[in-house]
Image (cartoon, rainbow, N blue to C red; front, side, top):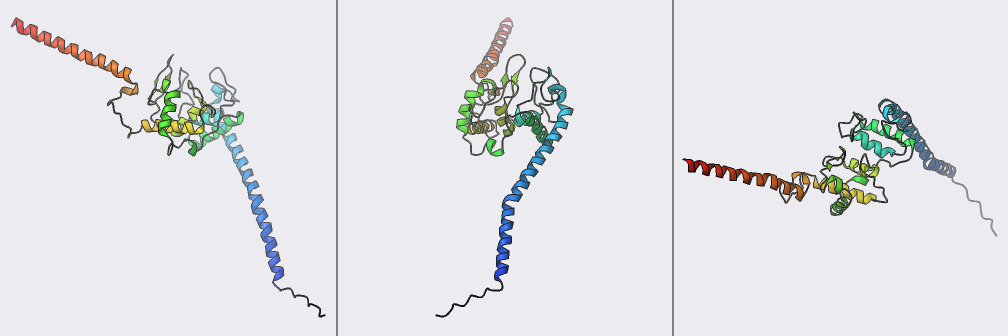
Length: 270
């Protein structure tokens, strides 16, 4: 029986094995190392944002809210309010407040968005609270506007009236007009319950419901929205319209009656 001659190894075989080994090592590095580096970079960026936010806070917020956000007689505690509350209050210019009062109105904002993000990061580090919503959470495109209207009339119209045009409350407070409010700020207001407004957790109003409400508010206050009843007098409904009819309509009729009577009396004298 003939011996089977040993197969001769190809000269390039060793090179191929070496290349496979290098590829495997590189694959492992690609799979694990960059993820760790990205996480470390993210943590470093977060820490930097908190440090910068702390400096901004010390300059513009600590006099009312305390050096550690614990609150004072001039401002409430910020521990646990979350990044969403900061983004809303500072992003709409309500904070820093110009002066104390029954309600802090919206005004031109002082900080740019990067600074607002840093302030939000610092306040969020004081205690857990609602985080800033992502765009897909408040983007009105594709939302159910009709259902948003039902939810708005059930939960919001008592203060903001049926079309979100605002209304008066007690002791100098008011529900603001929602017509020109950014969708993100509408969503954050529902999350955090600023000033006199109650907060709506995801248990009370899930994310989809909030997005439907945002879509409804933007729809009824857009330039394309129709008003079948004509001039809507602030959107307050039949009470305001009836009052207008009584005051101006009846007043016009009385004025006409007086004018006719005066003309008649003058004609009889002549």
